[in-house]
Length: 442
Image: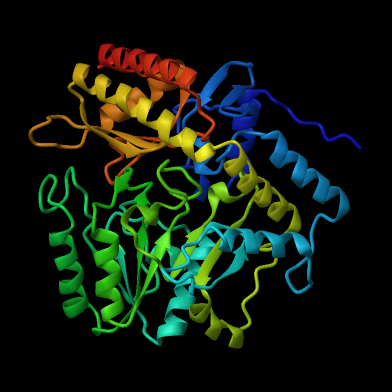
């Protein structure tokens, strides 16, 4: 039986508008509908066969490239043998993958840190599990999160999400928010470093919690928050202060992990901190739905008394894709490519800033970059209107990316990590055209 699929853009838009729930209507990036028909590595083709450079990685999920042949082959081979085997039964593929993921974690000075893995269906589920794990291990309820954090759409993940527009009233409580250490527009001014923000963690623990906390959730580099790096000393200092209050340090690596920052496999390694729990998803499966909680063995041990089950979490087809992703990262030197190409692209974006006054800041590391728009560089007033105009113009320039940040005034670049040096010029030229077009339209 052959299923009939219409690739007509208008028909697809009409069908989506009629049958998609209202909850999905706002999550449409461009003013006009867009349909992608195929992808190959860092490129996408729409229904009219026009090629684009994917600077979004289809929401950071595509880590090593669209339809990467090694990942697709691994998943197909497994699916043809056994598509799904629920977690209650043993299967070698997720078992091997757990071992390989654990091997990427820090071992401590004497190699005495043991890690264990719990696979989930998604990053949001992994956040939920990490929250349950932290509260179960410590016996404490209070949790800290950052004001512009994004951790996912489930009720528990939304309770940890501070960024405007994502957190909704009525979410579960016992969460206290601390200011994000934004070195461009943070509450303590530009380049204030980590110290005043660490003081805020201490103040919040003392005034907004019982004094005993389960943990703090920190994105090693904030994604939806506008690509905000944690300044030197922040992650280490946050871990010290929270552990002193009885809690755990939970690193959210959903967007910053798997070599994306270029310098390290995991974003938290930039500060030398060793988390108690690490949450990962998105790039872990290169588009196949998968997430994981990797925790220190003793932290996960109390969960043995709970019935915690994720039907598709250790799906062997997705885990086969995940194993292939790790192999590609290692053999193709993907992390090194992210470092070199990301640095070259950042330099071109900094050059772009010199010519366009609307750009207030350019930042990031590896292939996790952002352009922030302002109405005035002195006041740093966010400019979401210009951001939206440039964003739309980027589509015409053959670039796919996203808007982010608390005011939707940032352009977020998180492309597949196979983006090449040859693409850097094309991306820079595309941005130049987009800024010029947006300027003329205002």
